[in-house]
Amino acid sequence: MKSHSSKDGSKASASPGKARWRRARPSKFQSAPGAANSNSAAVQSAPKDGAATPAEGRAAGRRSAAKKPILKTLDRAISKAGIASRTEAQRWIAQGRVKVNGKTTKDAEHWVDLKRDRILLDGRPVEAQEKVYLLLYKPKGYLTTRTDPDGRPTIYDLLNGVKQWVFPVGRLDQDTSGLLILTNDSGLAEHLTNPDYHVPKTYLVKAAHVLTDEQLESMRQGVELKDGPTRPAEVRRLRDSGQRTFFEITITEGRNRQVRRMVEEAGSKVLKLVRVSIGPLRIGPLQIGHVRHIDPAELRALRHSGRRQGGAGAG
Ligand code: URA
Image (tube, rainbow, N blue to C red):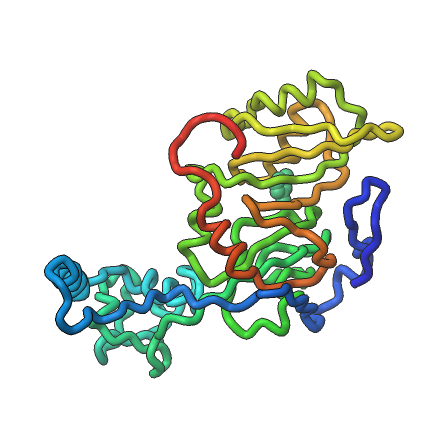
């Protein structure tokens, strides 16, 4: 896909127009130095022979932890393995494609012990997949969904070279472009999308009017939306140009169309919206429509981003 710089300096897709309806394309993988798939499975080392008493204690602790069952419902166990969403797993279970210890079960709520129970899907063992972490520069015009009944392009059309099952962490509207993380790691997704962690997400906005300081301040303080007041946000005017204001906003929630609704509540309209960062992860020089692996240092930083407790303030 062609990309060009718009007047505000941010990248914009060439108007999708009819091209919007094009189907699958080869994925544009951009490699990042040091990027790699990282397997997050922890490998525990066995206690050494002749270990001192505290080490023996720790080893005993590990042994007793190893005996503890890890209980999950069947749909969750399949999704945790990183091969499907829970909804998809529930469908497979209902279709009778899943066996637990040799017996077909159609109950997605059936409890299984990940350490002991043998789960088969279509006769093949369900095994934890290697974790994969991708950053996609989503272009405008693409849906953040797997398939669209109307045949519109989806983000998966941009991922043809990706073999593993991955899902998007949160959503970007069809008309929003920018940084989208895709992974099969539901733990990381939960961390990044649960508002309790306050992970900041930053957007560049082109508004339909020149906004006053008061309008920007209202978004900074938090505006009243129909699903409740927004948390205080960081808002920075970048420039006014003709009849438009360009500004940057950082929010720590991820409600549906939140930025667009905030701008409307402040009395204007979004003409263009680009997500440029999630926590410490920036879109950087990645080209629009391209995807790359998130490197191990970025991944560590993402895992430590945000904060756990409630309270006000972006970041
Ligand atoms: N806010 C919006 O309005 N749209 C998005 O896609 C993301 C945040």
